[in-house]
Length: 457
Length: 123
Figure (cartoon, rainbow over the protein chains, first blue to last red):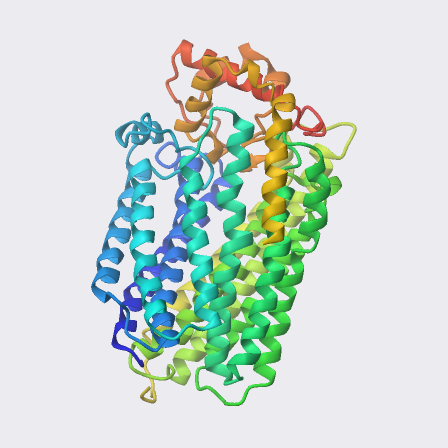
């Protein structure tokens, strides 16, 4: 570890992994509810489990991004963090606020929680992914501001690199677009229009900048390729991301009451969205092939290559699959969407956070890389989780195609629930594969406790 | 930067066109209250509305046309069905007034010009 203040990243990474485990457990519960509908009912209705599953994902990825920034920025800026104390304080505020929110979801009916937390003052709750009570949303803003203050000042006082500027741009964008979560007009169409400014402009906009910066940082470290080369790639990738991704928002504006020209803008621009992801794949492999050193942390390299491939498959290929308006007319809001969502989030954001954790955690624990044994376990975890996710995606895609066939693209459509019963086989297969994913995750967690010889950092 | 400005320009144009498609003149107080009931019970956590939400339970953007007001109210009042193994919807204890508001919201939503989506009445 080159700078003492990088150490604040450690609790962020540990919290991220802990919440990841929680997310997967709730995912398995929901997967089971898909086939045994009354499982845990009424104690844990599906909508509550889903809120916990998706909110935990968002929160642990945010923990991961913040941890990554706290680790990377001092090293990039070649200076200590402006305020490690503030970073530690914000960690506890964010963790406690997050935990209380989850407890709130689980302990009381959602309507009661809304009432208790003052949703009547400014109704923002009950919209997908933005279910958090008003005070939690306000808390997120406070934590984000303190975090950005800390990071930005550190960059300003030290060396400015392309990696840290792209990261800053992504993180500021993340905070700015989150502000639209406070805007909830009575007109559902307008509500949906700006809801996507948080959701789409996050995951297909500014988060991709964060993804690019994290990946570039790890590749610089593990391959030893010249920074200039890697930064050129990063610039081209983020330029393509913004060119395609911003107007690509239009692929959400086909069927929600918005004008029909969005079908053209959305189709054309989002058809180009796979390009930056494909470039990331080429980028990752190219840099590793041209490596100038053999970094002892082989696991980190595997996660980085995995990010390149899986982000392209999940976000690029599975996104393109249903992004053209005439196709989306039939697939909108089916299991095809769920399939894409799972692999895209895993491939792009889960894997990049695990990449930076894999690279940084050993160093934070005082060694250049983990023992051979720990790394082998980590690589097993990578393959188990990744292969499981590929099959989860394939089974959901199969379910989605049948759903479209039976319910949408037919002259004799069956009712929703009748179709769900017919495609239950694929939900069972998905659940079984979900168990494999959990096993992979357990192996991953255990890898942190594996013994073995290590070299000092 | 150019593409962000183009996006803003398109947004500006959309704002101008929207009133013709979302028939906002019909957003009554009942519709506004209905939307809040929809939100504070997290209906989106199981259902889709105009195709967005969770995929666990039926699309409700066109439920007004599919089922009609009386069926919707009776259905919500009758939950959970308690059929073993079947997906269950919680009992939300809505008053008659709240049920009427929710139905008003569904009616307004079903009349938005969604470019002919969903493909058929089953949603």
